[in-house]
Image (cartoon, rainbow, N blue to C red):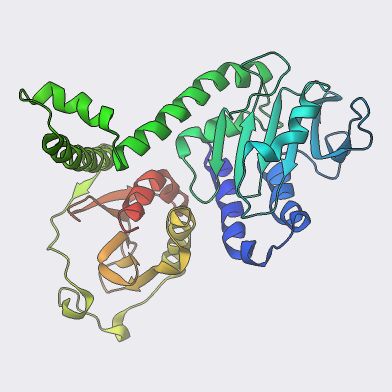
Length: 360
């Protein structure tokens, strides 16, 4: 996945966080968020009518002059239709009525329903030239699943490959639906889901009391399994050229005597501040930016959540010839990784986001 492409998504996500509260109409949503998505993320020139047609008109039978918000063209043919709603408005299939009508009378095989923050992508998997009722891909720019970012990139002007998109759409659609079911069952398991596990490990009769017990146990096991997977992911991601160090347990800030601070001897450098802003840009998609703070010491530059020393995101060890970034596992043990340039911090984006999610 291109760091540059991910950064474009992060920049737009930051803009949404800052400006969504002041965006009160559909037109404002289009100008502030949807046009930058089309132009900056997907790479189509919104000011070139051979690439993007706003207020696209397509008469259907007796319906004349109805418009769809945007049509994206490639090689002179409509490829993508986009219908917009106001930011914050819930997106449902009723909002896509015009997309349904226009879909079968244009060459478009892709349609998008968006409120500027959430995007639902549709195609015609169920019946040719008829838009599906369920999207094959959904994204929320403020809660972006990096595993599907490559699928978004397939829709960009430079990489647009309709056949590849359609081929991947079926798998994406059903994987997405399965993930939703799994998420629901993990947080609030249904009786059949609980019975599936209980019947394999409990030999007695599944009375109501037993089912209630196994409902609690299933939720607990699911939670512990997810936590262990996150921990394994962190451990796997921090393999390679590393310097493990043992850290003392973290204490509450007010009782923390492990860091000796003498502000007169602390020199905060431009590299440290720039590193802080890079880390902040990476994790702001999973945690509110105001919660991310820095605390400089004589031995390292710490980046914390809630200005709490028990919530470390990372440490920058820049006061030596070889720079290091220190990352933390679930037990808050630090592992240092050598970096050559500040841009190398982006290679640890997934670990930083996983760490930030622990404090939500």
